[in-house]
Amino acid sequence: MNEKSLECNLQDNNINEKDLFCIARHIRQYVEASKAQTTVDFGQPCFSCKYAMSNLCNFYIWDRFEKLYQATRVKISPKYQKTI
Image 1 (cartoon, rainbow, N blue to C red):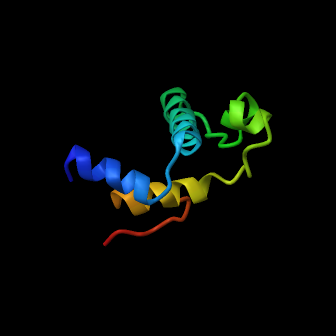
Image 2: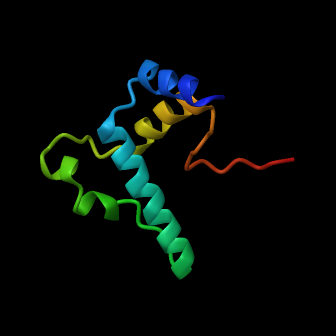
């Protein structure tokens, strides 16, 4: 997938600045918890989020990850899937 097609996919799937900001904050929380070898708190990024503080958020991260999947076909899910 080239850069132009990814940009089109993001637009086609209505991924906006709020979605990207949210996804990035939650991924960062996961990475930081992993580095510290602690349990990840997926609610933590919402505490200081400019969108959550302005009531522009439904506090459901997985719909944003679904949009990202539709654009990139990279699946991120809380569901455990056994690989064979």
